[in-house]
Image (cartoon, rainbow, N blue to C red):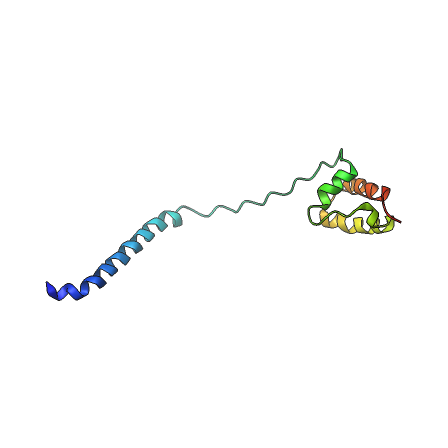
Length: 113
């Protein structure tokens, strides 16, 4: 029996690895055979205010424009600048026409010179 003594640590290591491998295999079988993976859930779209726009232009401006960047004061730009900005940002923010008109009206009221 003493002839196997030098093999004991290697034998125990091999048995230990075999047990660990068998455990991993046993756990992975139910995961692999659980069926096809479910389709990933679509990310929830941000909620936009209703098209009827019962919200004021200032509120719509705060809700929509602060999603991507800091709000600018209406006095920072002239009426002509705000009109150009709104043409561009309406498309980028996917704003309905009624909301874009309300926002522009709010910005034009306090626009700078």
